[in-house]
Length: 155
Image (cartoon, rainbow, N blue to C red; front, side, top):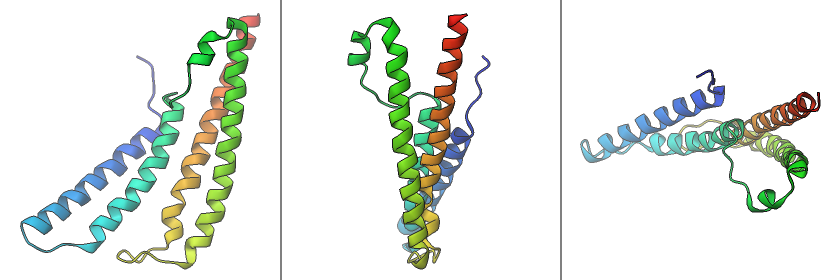
């Protein structure tokens, strides 16, 4: 087995572990010590936001995103590769757009801070463009690999 796990996989495990530990601390504090900590819920929410967008990039690297296979299966074999490439190019355009809009939105949120943690909200919202930016890179890699395999098959 020579398959390497993308870096996003390790980041997701780390984020999920910190989120789980944080929520465990909150449960212990609330139900055993009867003292809730306001920062634990907020931190868990923000880690979850980052987890979602980094996980989307991981799913792109693993080709695990949901897609409609029905139309693809009806296409002739020669057209399937072209349809995949066109679909990936459209997907890439969307991820680049969301990355750009996400950067703009995150930058606009640096004037506000979170209630309990007192960190700039821009840091939290930067999970969106980072996740989509990484996803764009993963899609570009898939497009390049598809062209390389077509060249290899042509020779």
